[in-house]
Image (tube, rainbow, N blue to C red; front, side):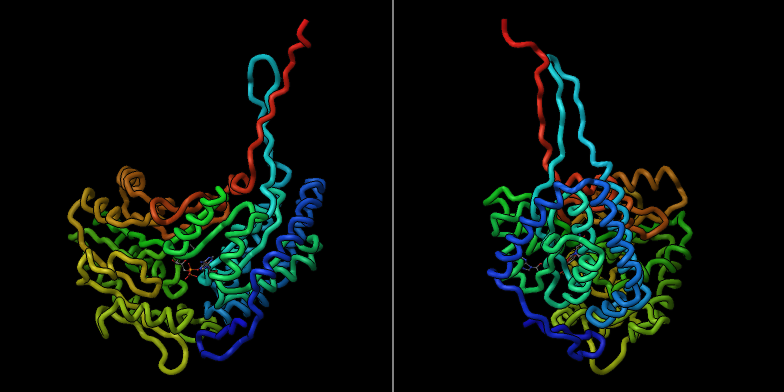
Length: 453
Ligand code: NAD
């Protein structure tokens, strides 16, 4: 049994049976049957059903958001966005079904066609930090490309995933096509990875587990997409609108209590504006509204679990740094924290804390900014604040990360590709090419030469 706790109160929200390896076997068998019918259905019908699924999600945004507040402690405004993001993913992917075209390549002696075939059954293994969006990032394009999906949500956050599966049936998606298997990573997750009937694994989670999964997929040459950790830089040049940069910085690492793979947790500030930047940042951090996630005014809720709270505490000396507030009493609370004297090589400056903690480091010039930004094994996101267009482009090109933003902290848009360099992952999700990652390309050559005389 999985016990789902409300991280703001520690009350038990639900208990959910945990899927066993046998449950995964049975689910794969159902998915194989459903996928055959789905792939054979007319593209327009598949597109229509996915659009209908999006419409049903749209009708349940508030319900899904409230569920996410309770199981994950997300603030209600974010949770609504997350349910809306899942809806948008299915809508967007539906538009791809009828546009998933192969090519006709000029060759001598015949006609050459490429055909994009579905992979079959896809396993999506999701983390707890954005349960709905990340489930949809894998599931929507996989279904649109003609696959069946088995989704394993994180142990702590199975409820919205289970509800999405019910809504899929309500929308008319065939039984067995999209199934949710709540369970332990080492049991249900592992069974998906090992199962010969699962053609691809889309994994989002820690780099540690991602590496294990990649190694196990290698045994079967199983396809894999990995979205892993990050330690993203926020680079503020002296020629930027420094006030705007300082006011935007708290949200870039406090959103979702810092449990965001794109969190800008290494704030690099050019020396001449370093003091001014902190002068504006400090009160913005101190006044960040932390508390009941169901309250519309709250900006930051709790961490997901006691284990995560202990992990975050282990990185930060008690009382250190610029601090915001956090409620006392039950719940997994940690205050917004900015460290200004961290050693750039210390764990808090190098490792992914996955909590509301950032370090601020000064730099002298563009070359040093780029060097510091790239001094990480990760490469997921990053921001550049400057009014100099040339510098914005130079630095965006020089930083080794998959998702850069200039004078903004936006990383995730369903229209544009998302993924990491280095140990932040492998492959890309979202954007116009998302469906292609769930297909095999088959090449067929048709000879136009007559029979040999
Ligand atoms: P995690 O790696 O512990 O777990 C992720 C998922 O993998 C869970 O569903 C878990 O049950 C499952 N799992 C664990 N062990 C497994 C195993 N041996 N076999 C199969 N599945 C297994 O990560 P988490 O703590 O849930 O999530 C936080 C991490 O996710 C952070 O590192 C964060 O950066 C990363 N993340 C990355 C992105 C991205 O897009 N790059 C997005 C969100 C989160």
